[in-house]
Length: 504
Image: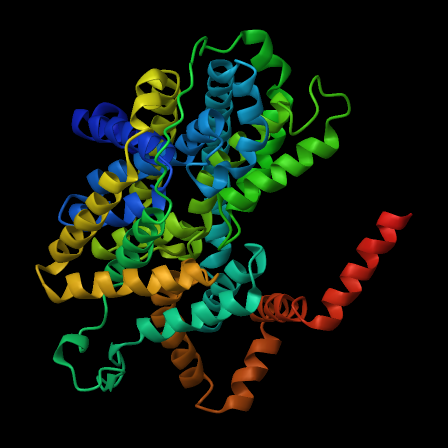
């Protein structure tokens, strides 16, 4: 227990780590608040600049950006009705009407306090749930890891609200990209087409920077707003009676966010929407109707999306499956530093787990400080022209890709992935499953082949093992249910039940 407390306090007592956490949180608040900049974009660029750092320093900076960035999207949602991040979409529904009533400062202050509350609940869920899940996950074999990898990719398509077929296709595309290079078991070349540059594979960080950073910058260049919106901000510190009155709503939404965040492939945007819907249904007599400035509608999504941060770390650290796009990037950072997320991570490196818990707690406390200050400064920064900001993002992405291995080929790959990501987004395809596929593809491939070796290369024995081992059977059933839920017959039946309930 004393050792765990010491690891927890590492970033609290080390001035260097303390400063990096504060800097990351502050930067994340403003990155997340500026429409067009995303936490994923920032984290993907940061990983290329921090891969030579000590692992604690790299995680302190990236975790700070993550915590601050998830919250930051609420500022532009409240002030401009432009969510700075997908997780702030629900926040804008009632946050902007509050700003129109002259309560922008009060809305920002209340959202800050509830965001910190949600963040701390998420960290508590991580500290409690991760060791328990790790004890179960340590019993996993190659079959279970293969199934987990497939489920992690498919969950993006099933839970994100987008087309499942498109999500599954993009996940498969990512798996194929992840297999480029030398076969890990036979050293034969795969998908290299005779190119020496492809024999080492395509670094997933390069694909990540291109698909998230460059592609998003190209998309935002099409949406240049020539008429900046100005808004007066005052009275930021919330009243204690308001905090106490809405504490129940915040705690309930925080619980929803922590649970949803722990589901691989979901994230704060889904958690925020579900918490908003729950608050709308459970609040009997709001002072103001939802959609017209209800404070419950502001608090619920903000508490939920910040609680999802801690929740997203649970599957990442215990199963090696990212909870969302940012934790997929953090998995990359851990791999770069020679660490393998999974059940053995908590056994072999418990200091890293408790460092992450302590660092996330510290970042949330810094969020309380930075969230309640600098709002007037932000109202100026948010007016920065995209015509200046987005080209700068593209240049930083190219520099970051080159810095990974000092290889100029990576610049071309980054720009190529950026252009591909631009067209994919234009036609409604998700790029998140591609990154998950690139990261999880080698894991699925290697564990499938190990499982086949254990089954003596007999497909019948392989499938029999899936159905006779309890954990494999449960995961197989979950995978089949996910696929069956997308069939036209079940969708038609679900729509029929929904219409029947509405008519009743």
